[in-house]
Each structure stands twice: as structure tokens, then as C-alpha cells.
Length: 403
Ligand SMILES: [Zn+2]
Image 1 (tube, helix red, strand yellow):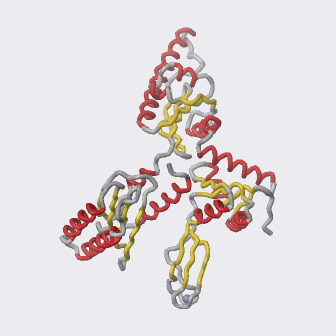
Image 2 (image 1 turned 180 degrees about the horizontal axis):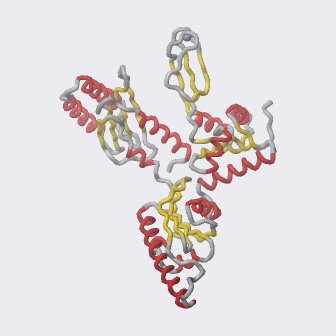
Image 3 (image 1 turned 90 degrees about the vertical axis):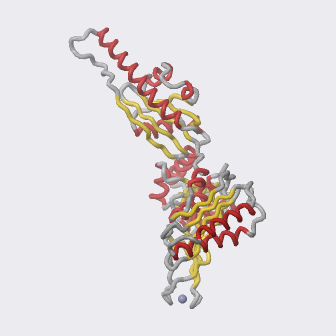
């Protein structure tokens, strides 16, 4: 299983590959599982090579053949595939065409062999590898509303919202009290059946459902759960019943928060606790909470950080670049890295190093004994970290002054 940091790095790599587009069907993706013989793959590539010699467009043919050649040249260095297999993404990109060649060793074993030539790289099998997050079903119900959703990793998704026709507490004039109560009970039963069927269907469709949380105000949720309106396979997965004020979309987050003690190990809960601690320290002005690139970096280097809180939404890179003409060098954090021009000569500089800032800070934290928390922007707390604190913050072990 991947830890959060590996997952982050892997996701980032896929994001980069996803952005690359070929002019035509000329980008090659080659998936080699661990048990495949390299000689078989070579034979297959030779075959693809001779077939590609028939491609009509001269430029496309040239590009495809160059890509296949490049893969074959690299494959010669392999005696056998690495333990998890290997994936090649190779193609000529841009004008004038430049060879892009990414060799990815998947973090967990892949079991498909696949060759594909397309106008973009084929990433689906790798994307699936990192989707194995915990999924919980969320169900909110009272006599008026029912909301069904999912907690996926630290993201809350709404799946269905329904309203009932169960009459309110006040009877209409002319009806006898008993008749009114009977009609209400019939309507409630029908409502529960409808809600139960919908929830069971949606929850059973998820094959990795770890548990189900049920919420709502008052006793209705218990009545619903005890009344066998849910499929027994869903019922078995109920972790608990929780009081919430809302039964609409707002209630979904309320429900997850209410269940936090029972979901101790979940990322979303851990993220929240840490962010709340951070915000508390800020509020108290205790000096134990800091934020900002430089401040956090200095504290990390001094070994003063207990928890590094860093947003996975940061699109920043540490860039080391050099001008080939005058030798001018830069070493700084930038958001855009496509082309950097020498301020003196106004020609593109050579990029010597490009490092994701999240990686840079995570490494620094690990070497100084700080806990790294990469926090997604899907949660409320993650949004606060990103927007209000620039995506980089820390809780300190002790008061520490960089000044
Ligand atoms: Zn220069």
C-alpha cells in the first residue's frame, strides 16, 4: 500500500503525463508486467516497427518509428522487468518535435501487457492503482429528506437526494386522529422502503465499501435501520448511528465529523485534528504555529517542527537554471517553469533541476524528524490551509524565533 507521500508523487507524475498531447496518433504507451520476458517484448516491438513503416503521413511515421526505436534502445538495459513491472511513455512532442521518454516503475505490481499508440498517453491502468482509497457510505434520513453520499479518502461526494410525502405532525381538518396516524405510518413505511432501496443499490455498487454511517436528527434513523429497509449486506456494514442537525448535503460533513471517534485512522479526521490544533495555536498566539515558505523552512532546518502541514494543491517548483551564454544562475521557487529567460541575455536558460516544492519540504521534514502531513484541498481545512496560509504551515515542538 502507498503512503500519502508516495501517492502524491505518483499522482503528480500522472498529471504531468496527462498534459502531454501529440499532434497525431504518435505517443506510445507500453505496459510490461513483471512476468513478461524482455525478448518477447522486443519481438513485439520489431513487429510494431515494421507495421508502422506503412503509416501514410511522413511526419507521423517518422515520429512513431523514432519512439519505438527509443523504447527498444532503453529496453536493452533490462534483463528482466523490475519487480512491479515497468511502463514506457515515449513520443515526439511539440514543434520542433522533442523526444519525451518517461519510464515509470509502478508502486504496486501491474498485471497487464499493453502497447498503445495514440495522440495521448494511456494512463488509466496507473490511475486505477492509486484509486484504492477507503470508501464509506453516508446515509442521512428523517421523515422528510434522505441524502446518500460517500466518503472517499478525504473527499465527500453526494450521490442522491430525495424528499418524502410523509405528512407533517398536524392533521388536516376532518380526519379522525387514528385514521390520520395510520395514513402517516403507511406513508412513512413507503418512504423508508424507497430510501432503503436507493441506498442499498448505491452502496452495493461500490465494491470497496468499508462501512456505512447513518445520521439524522431524532429517532427516525434508528426506526429506519431497525425496520430492515436496508439490504442485509449494507446493514452488516453499519458502523454507527449519529445525530446530525441536517439531512441534506450539509449533513454529510456533519455526519463524518460526528463519526470521527469511530473513524480514528481516517486521513480526513487526522487532517482535521491537526489543522484545528494549528488554528488553535494561531488563535492563542502561542508562537507554536507558523506559516509561509521561508519561516517554515527555517524552522524545519532548526529541527523545531513537530508537524509540517502542506497542501497538495501547491503548484510550485524549486528551479535551478543556468544561462549557457553568460553563466548566470538562478535557484528559486517558481510557479511557471515552461521557459525561463536569462535576465541579461534574454535567451532561454538551461533547467538543471526542477523539484516539486511539496517533495522538497517533505524531505526536509523527514530528515529533521518532523511528521509530514500532505493535506488535500477537498476538505474545508485543506481549503483554509491553501487559501489563508499559502499552503505551507507548521506546528512547532517549542517556541522558536527565526529572527
Ligand atoms: Zn545570460
